[in-house]
Length: 251
Image (cartoon, rainbow, N blue to C red; front, side, top):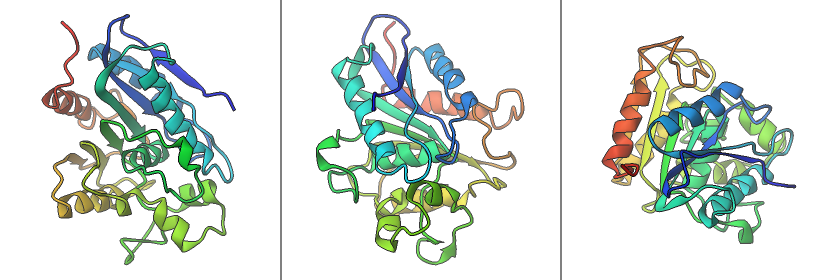
């Protein structure tokens, strides 16, 4: 299956680069979480690329392999972008946030995925109202109110072991790249508990991160610029966070 990775360059120079992963519950890809986000990243002086990863029933492991291949193509220069060394990030929304978080916690031994496809981890992860746990209960005790992505990705009969292995919140280790989260406290699609669970795992591991939980906003806001200006602050906050990591584009 050919890789569907659309580049959005700023120019021909080497720059920090971010691979964008739209959401859609592994059933479709939300257009407003793809190209508009790439153009926003371009406005910050960053190259961007939008990945259209595998969807539909039993999308695992192909969705993860697509993400790995996207990272490999960008690092190698085959994607048509000059990627600055050690500054290749991922940005994902909802189910795309799950894939971004899986890449941020990736390893060669993910169940069901070919080990040779492993492409290393990105250098930063921006997780927007992400799905972080596929199990029936978050952290093994709080009922998981979002199970749709798990059913689409793995089918109805996935083992508890597989659901655990594909839950990024349970995969956190000391080698996870810097992470930025945002969500809303009343998100009914993917409850804020998903972000909070992964934040807790990072805090327990002593790993710094930045996170913003906005008071109000429906699921799937994307850039949120016109619908929820208060939530749209995440763009400015994220840009400041990236600058703090040293992801400053060439003058």
